[in-house]
Amino acid sequence: MGINERREREKEALRTRIVEAARDIVSAEGLEALSMRALAERIEYSPATLYLYFKDKDELIQEVVREGFRRMGECMCAESSELGSGADATQQHRASGRGYARFALENTAYFRVMFELPTVAQMDCPTHDEEEAQTGQESWTPVVEVVQRAMDAGLYALPDAHRGAVISWGLVHGLVSLYLSGHLAEVVMSNEEFMKLLEDAMDSLRVGWTPRETRQADLA
Image (cartoon, rainbow, N blue to C red; front, side, top):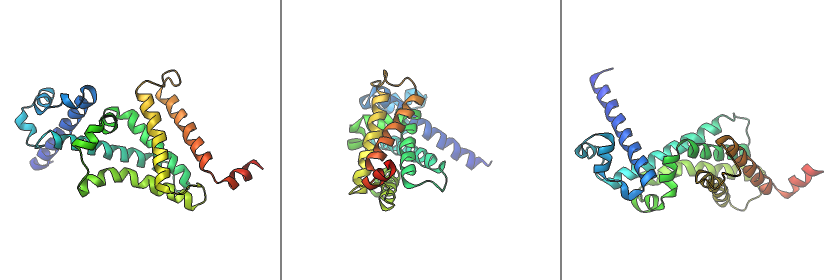
């Protein structure tokens, strides 16, 4: 490894460390607790060093959210890729839900910054430019597309794929949020039990969206 390559890796490693430290502060203490000085103290670097990577707090928060969406997209894609080429659209849709949930369970700090602190995503991290808009779309668009494929194949009876994607997202996101906040403690005792609960919920959604004639044929 050459000197330049080593330096680039060291810079990237420090950038990642800064982003993850900012994520942890916001997740644990709230947005108001994050400052460049507090962040510098946490990672034991000078504030001047942080400004070499990010011009201000807003840009740093944008990067935290962007990285969270990137990781979430990877989790969803990884879950879908395990199905193999023979999976139908409903199975792929369920896989995207599992991937979303697994991301939240394994990256809870990112999840909280992305979704539980709405002022971060909606005010400090506006998606006005093409790059920022693409960040969220990389995770959202495939979900809409797979719902549309299920509709085209006659597996889902829905009037609109986008609306269906929103409903399924609300189901998965709502259960994940309830679980992470401790409101399901009397129902599920572990991540494994939660994932089983999520499968039951997604199965109920699939049954409800199955065309009536198909359900009747299955019962005959």
